[in-house]
Structures are given as structure tokens and as C-alpha cells.
Figure (cartoon, rainbow, N blue to C red):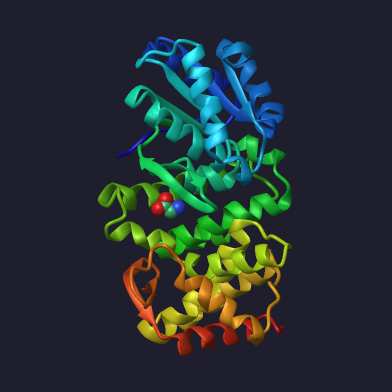
Length: 357
Ligand code: GLY
């Protein structure tokens, strides 16, 4: 379930790689899927690199935002493929963030029982997470990613200069998944991620760290493509992070996904220290970086019932227990760890303590 990963750190290499890749590919037709943001900031750059991005009748543009990752948008893509007489040898190129690669991947996986697709991630978050690993799908019936399929992109093309058009908050959001990959892999990669400068996405060091981060995910996905076991490790920080995200939506003050994950990491590393002796010095390193980068998410003990309820609804739990992927050290992963509500509440107390809220 792996995708060819192609690094194109500048416009010249983007042009060379796109030309070689699309020439080798010999697709019957090529379609491009993007959203309003990636159309404005990224497709315009791609137009200088390959003529396919200038064929407006083959470009499908969706409104931006996760609320559009729905059946109507999916139909729009199927319609464009069908009206454009796409055959099974057609290729779909998804240019955008996670919403576009998830939806476009699923449109491709299902059209004529499956056509090939490539991802060109335009956000840091989608580059190190959604564009890679074969999870595709849409939201349905009020539930996130309710309908979808495991189907990897043929290739993922990484052009880090795209991330320069991201605002600071969206860079931080992607960086949280890089912190997670650092914790899941090795002290070396953890230190590499901690030393990154988010102000400069065009540097060689930044590009290398992104590739290493993608490799961490790819290694895990290769061992467990359909999340029967090890892939659950990629949920580190997400069980409590998703609960923070739900609370922020409930308050109608939504936070970006990566911010919630970073805050969730603080609590889940605390659980790791309590249950598996994760080293306190590493916990402190993570806290220092997360406090500095993300600030604090505010909640009180009155929010605990809402947060615990949200954790119980996590679709990865199949019985009454709340389960986590935890660490006994950097790179030492323990999946399917359950924690009592009392200990989870203690981790929330710990969070409020370290953030002084
Ligand atoms: N985003 C987690 C995964 O791909 O499994």
C-alpha cells in the first residue's frame, strides 16, 4: 500500500518530475481536483510546470472546507469524470489539503471500480498525514469519514514552497503530526522535528524533516495498511485531541486539528508516563515545545464529562473502555492501552496545571 514519493523542492524540479511522471504514466485522460484556495495559490504555479494544469475543462474546483467533503462534492467529481469520458486508464491529480486528497482519492477509488490518482499536497498537514497511507473517504450522515476505502495514491509529489502560502496557524497544525511522528520513531527524528523553524519552509532542513516524517508514517502503514494493529499508533494524541476538537466545535470556537492533537499529546504523554514509565524529561521537552507553539486550550473541570463522553464515542473504541496508543519511550509503541476515567481526568488536571489554566 505504498505510494511513490517524489520530492520537488523548487519550480524547476517540479516541472521536471511532473513531465517525466505524466509522460511515463500514459493516462487516457488527466483530470485535476482542487479547491478555491489551491486553485488560486498552487494550480497557478503548476500551470507553469505542465500544460495539464491549464486545461480548464479538466479542472474540477470545489469550495474549500471540511464541510464540503460530502456526497454532493463527490457526485460533482464523478460527474466531471463521466462527462469527460474518463476510461479506467484515466488519472486524477488531487491538488489540495486533506479534504481534497480524501475526497478525490475516494472518487478515484470508486469511479469505474477504480482509476489511479496522485496527490499533490498543498498543506503541511496533508503532506505528512492525509496524502499518504491510502485512507480515502467523505463525511456522511453527520459523521466524519463515515464512507470510504483504503486505496493508496500512485504518487505523492512534495513541493514544500507551497507551505509558504499557509498562515502561521496552518503551519503549526501540520507540525503537530510531525511532533507525533517524532515521538513514534526515534530520538534522532524527535530532535530533528524539535529543532525546526516554521518560519522557513523552503530550507533544505525543513524539506528533509518533512520527508523523514512521511517515512515514519509510511513504515507504519506498510506493516498494517488497514489499521488492524500497529497503525493505531498514528492515533497518539488523537483520542484526547479529538475530544478537545469536539469541545471547541460545541462552543462554536473551532480550533485547527493539529492544535487539538498537540494538546492531546500533552495528556496522552502524561498517561504514558503514568502507565508505561515514559521518561519525564521527554514529557517536559514536549510540553515546552507545545506551550510555546500552540498556547493553551482553555477548559475547566466542568467540561470533563463532555470530554470523557467524546472519548467514549471515539469510533476506535469497540467496548466500554477508552483506548489509547501510548509510549514507554520515544519509538516504543504500545497500542490498545485502556485507562480508567479517573486517570484520564488526572491527565486533564495535569494539563491545566502545566498551562496554568
Ligand atoms: N491519520 C491517521 C492514519 O492515516 O492512520
